[in-house]
Length: 342
Image (cartoon, rainbow, N blue to C red; front, top):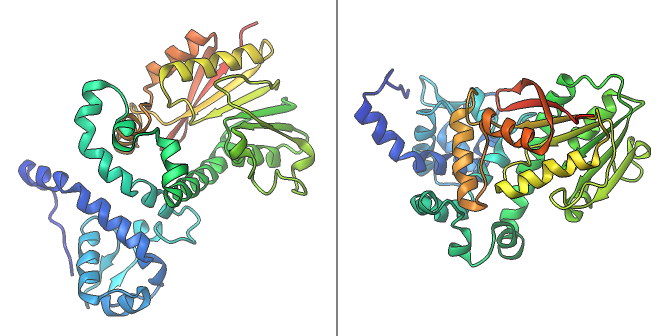
């Protein structure tokens, strides 16, 4: 049975950290092999799991031994392997599955980009053009369709999970219309419209994104009669008026794009309109290890950045928004309540 010593000494901890790629690779391998999906409620041997996922037993046992060190699977006293809370999140059918996110954060291009972090820190810009001769999203859609599909699945899974938390948190009583700006496939909007049956909604995002909205929003869907879908780029224009504007996890680009989006909301909205901005933060958050890592990845791939409370409030205020309460949505997200001044 694998056991892990309590608190490693600093030198050992640093050794563990510099081998962090091995842990990430192990999680990716388990996700790609479908080990968590193959393991049911009954503990199984490495041989049984190897047969189920069509792998060699001995190397699979080595992979599982590594993962158990991090609490992903556990080894029983009789040498079998069982689920833990974390390993269950690698199942495709888990309600809060992180399988797609695990694959996305370890896609092949990430292994090319991370070693050049020092260059990005020196220059303050993405390394992607130098690596692949084109921007990040152009590369995904033109040269790496499999990776683009993983990205879409990861963003969809993440959006669905946070949509439930947002619908539970936000009180939109008294509002008759809500607009989800840069809202992807509209999972957040759909959740809010289900909560408020009299409310009308607008979804704005890039044409390729809104071409495949949440089934509840598309023609024939339960919410379609109350929804307007607007193809567009919020960095250029927001031709939408609503009582409440939702802006979630899109203010991570370069400062110019972020500020233009915020100003476009202020220009489009009526005085007194409510603007709710939801973002990951790199400070004052229990998810800082995750969000600071994502912040560095954004620097590498698009030259973007996650925000501190101070940096986000500064940009909101500069755009002309009046910032009010800041509320945790879940361990990963904060909601900033703003209004458009009269």
